[in-house]
Amino acid sequence: MEIQQNISLKNYNTFGIDVNAKRFISIRSVHELQQLVVKEKSIFLISGGSNMLLTKDIDDLVVHINTEGICIDREDENSVYLTVNSGENWHDFVLWCIDQNYGGIENLSLIPGNVGTCPIQNIGAYGVEVKDVITKVEAVSIETGKLVQFSNTECKFGYRNSIFKNEVKGKYIITSVSFKLTKKDHVLNTSYGAIETELASKNITNPTIKNVSDAVIAIRQSKLPDPKEIGNSGSFFKNPVISISLFENLKEQFPNIPSYPVSDEEIKVPAGWLIEQSGFKGKRFGDYGVHEKQALVLVNYGNASGKDIYKLAQQIQNTIKENFKIDLEIEVNVI
Image 1 (cartoon, helix red, strand yellow):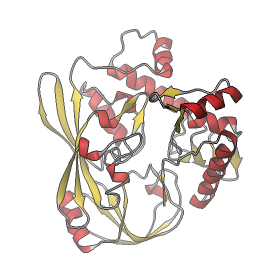
Image 2: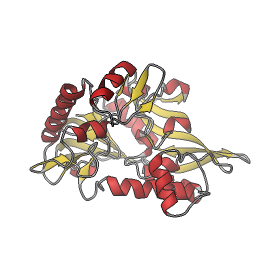
Image 3: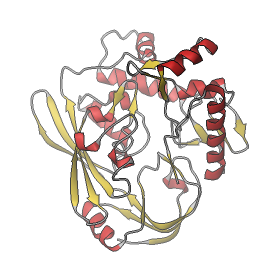
């Protein structure tokens, strides 16, 4: 294990923010990680760098999780049980599963980041959440260096949420995630209008998991910028869940406000619609701004700082609160 000095993190975060790591190490095995946490208690984790906005240099030791590997634990006639190391790229893993005809995560195609971060915020898209296919999460305790397993229930998954963002935040480093996927009789979720429209445009009436994945990829590519071309972290804000009474009041003012039912008392409103209605979609401020095709995405056009982008996020939050009486919550981790 070699610790490097004064390394730029620009290529380690999808926003492309150029901050400095005073010390940096890339970890390629669980054993290396266990050895490291026993020696170093003040560490800063980075994997795919897709769910963070860096606003300052990092004084702690930056630990890049670079472990790879996919293992088939067992399988039966209907299902396959996989354990995937944290450093595997999420989208590459999805494509690998589709090549093997393993179903359940095709709706989560093209989501940026690595496998190890997928349980933390319970990634989701087009009616599917990763919690639906996770069986367990394995992690190293930063305090003891020992491996610990969390069952699906113990992960306390919620909307873009888990125990790893709350009670045990900063106490464990996820080393692998285990999944149960289908081998046949796949249950496809094509109920989101965008997927149905994309499939219909190709005259696909009996879709496969690959058809659904291809549709999701086409939709995302049409709306979302490629981080390799324009720095971004995907959806910057969560879709707010509000009370029915507040929604009814808003509907009187904004008859076209879209919504998705959550329960008898609550309803979800698209954050992108709120931001677009407030005039931010496509707005550019020098080297940063709001993406022209998707208002949920804040972008770095070149050399913006994390502080610039965070300031814009706060401006958007304040405007949404003023216009709609809704508290817009940031989805990415602001460091």
